[in-house]
Amino acid sequence: MSPTIVMAATELTEPVAGGGRLVISALVGIALIVALITILKVHPFLALIVGGLAVGIVAGVDVADVITSFTTGFGTTAAGVGILIALGAMFAKLLADSGGADEIVDAIVGRASTRMLPWAMAAVGALIGLPMFFEIGLVLLMPVIYLVARRAQLSLVTVGIPALAGLSAMHGLVPPHPGPLVAIDSLGADLGTTLALGVLVAVPTVIVAGPLFAPIAGRWVPVPAPDRFEAARESEEMEQRPSFPVTLFTVLLPVMLMMGKALADIIIDDTENGVQRVLDVIGTPVVALLIAVIVAIFTFGRGAGMNGEAVAKSIESSLPPIAGILLIVCAGGGFKQVLVDTGIGTKLADWAQDFDVSVIFLAWLLAVLIRLATGSATVATITASALVVGLAEGLSQGETSLVVLAVGAGSVFFSHVNDAGFWLVKEYFGISVGQTIKTWSAMETILSVTGLIFVLLLNIVI
Image 1: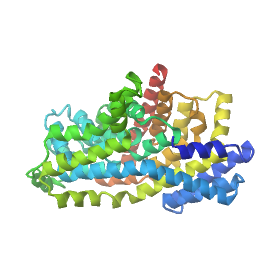
Image 2 (image 1 turned 135 degrees about the vertical axis):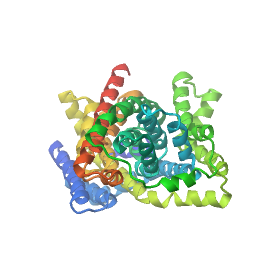
Image 3 (image 1 turned 90 degrees about the vertical axis):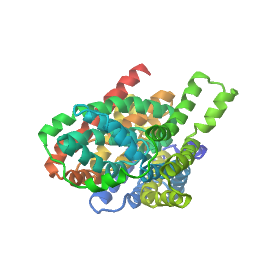
Image 4 (image 1 turned 90 degrees about the horizontal axis):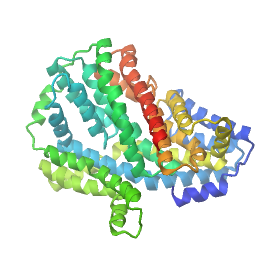
């Protein structure tokens, strides 16, 4: 946790009102955000600002102090998480523009038998989803899903659900995606530890919600693949692309750097050791992603025959689409700081101890409720992680990371009509609302519940 947040928390977390008023203020703020987003269709950025101000005012905090608290949280989040999201977007755009994503797809799917295709598509979804936002990954993979389903004579659902499971699991559980990053920042978790545990949870979760569920969903909703994207796909295959080993190495490079730092902290545990000092620097999230982007300029850009101008254009075009995401995430940081500074987190922590409620389950449940209400996994993660800040105090490094993962798992629960992803899947798959609920929404629910189960199992060990 950054020094600014720590200072704000220690100075202002003394409750400014009674417990009842604090709870009411939090409920008013959350309800206002939900109403603005779902009923009035206000952008989440504005909704989070209004919600944060409402929490402070109802709690009895001076308006000037509420504004200071909100802007402090906004700025701290922008300084930490915002940089990572921007670097991640640059990396993902280079991967897509160079044909590296296509290389991963072709290398994995091309070696799979018909029976193993759902497993191969799950692996593709997870790998593509590691550096990419869900919506970008879905748009990128749909031509592949169409092509594979058509050539294998399988239902579009049977082929597509495993890929969606891989994308969604990475989006909810594994940094550097915005949701996990915000939760890590809010709860003061270690990114490397959370990344390692997130992968441990994501793999079996994807298997259950993807390849194991897909054949069942395919029988429920048999959908033939359309002829779209066939010609575009064949022309793409003629272009120069980076090789599969080079692409795979580049995609996994930031993961290896961050996990290397986490392992060094556990195994070496000596800040004076030269190896650990180097790993501590290059494994820092900002540095790891910066290294990955620089390496990608050569492996993806030059590897695909792109000149300097083309590489610069690719990187430049990666930033405008994420402007909205950055604003939402940073506003979420401001909303979180208002909740922390009013003392609601401390009050919830006290109540949870009185009723002996599992921190992990409570974190998951809060994220589920907010996800159902707003339809946004990012808003659910931001709000739920803010509410359990007090509960996470005093937990070990591993336990705090598991709370982050519980929030992430809850944030993907039952996507329905208030979620843009729901309509994206519906239109791309060409199915009805009811069929989308039976396939996509059911898969998201299985993903969320299975993720919680594996987090709880890991908690027994940790």
